[in-house]
Amino acid sequence: MGRAEGRKGLPVLLRAFEALRGAGVDAKLTVAGATEEEVAPLLLDTEGVEIAGRVSEDEKWRLLGEADLLCAPSLGGESFGMVLTEAFASSTPVVASRIAGYRDVVRDRQDGLLVPAGDAVELGEALRDLALDPDRRVCMARSARERAERFAWPQVTAEVTEVYEDTLAALGRSAGIDALPGDLEAAAGASRLAEQALAVHGRIDVLVNGAGAGLYGRVAALDADELERVVRVNFTAPIVLARALLPQMLERGAGHIVNVGSVVGHVGHRNEAAYAATKAALAIFSESLRSELQGTGVGVSLVSPGVVETRFFEGRGAGYDRRWPKPIAPEMVAAAIVAALERDQAEVLVPGWLALPVRLRGVAPGLYRALARRFD
Image 1: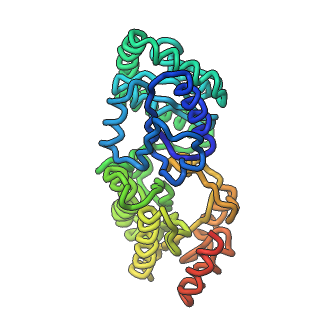
Image 2 (image 1 turned 60 degrees about the vertical axis):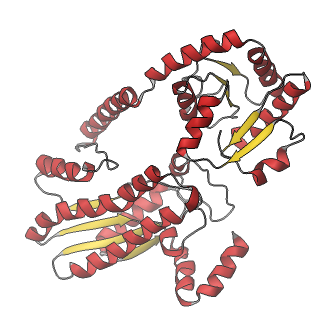
Image 3 (image 1 turned 120 degrees about the vertical axis):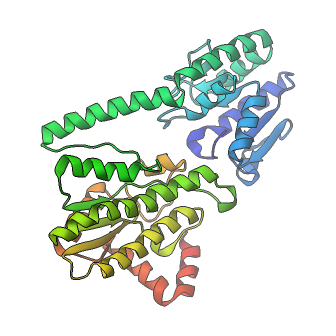
């Protein structure tokens, strides 16, 4: 279950499955998350393989519940085995690569098996051992369900929040600042954060709306909850924070709001329609608010980066695999934000050359689209 990215190790699983079938085990493999067009070139034998393609949240849970095993052959780069915990919650044991992220979730030979990453032979043998031992699978399924409680959201959230708050407090003390954690995904999270900031500091001189959530995929296949989350974090939260903090800025006749957008909010991009729409909305909000506040002493700037070297792409569930444009360092974006504040700039694109495609789309949209298709 996962996208057809190289690091997910799908070819390794396919070779192991072919060997399993060749050994006389009447097994069935369901590949979810990758499309038939992506999987077909990797197949040597289609017998027993079902390609489910992109699946909804409900369909994902149905597949996990019906499966005898979940196989996660990732080669690395996994910060946490979320899909493994979802399998556990469905009482489904797993066979996974012995890599960082997965080792912290799977208890080898108890609720699953860990095998060397990239080793199709070891993976095939592990699958065969479990296929021929249903009693062992039942025991593992029971242990998997018990293990799922360890990773239940209330438990994980409490632990992460505690570590996060302790870390922020320590960093704040060392730098002479107050770090206030907030949950912008929550319905009232932005309002609570603004109230907390005003209670601690009394006044806020600068608001930088830099939080952002990515969402990748075709619109027809997007999860409704994920869509709502991205709209709330990327668009609703900045408006709520601005509304809450503007009165005290206007009263003093001084202050500045910086909204961090994205170049895709200016030009759009395939499979990023929803994310691009939230950033486009933020851009128009910034322009409108700047006009509204003209002459009040409160400034508004929009800083729109291109691709930045952060964990953004890991968070959205799809890596960045385009050859162009090259990712830039986060420090470049930080410097652009400072410059926008100091110079009261209405709009900044980072790096600056991104202004070219943005302007080209404005004056010659047909030419822009033709070039975009060519270089995409």
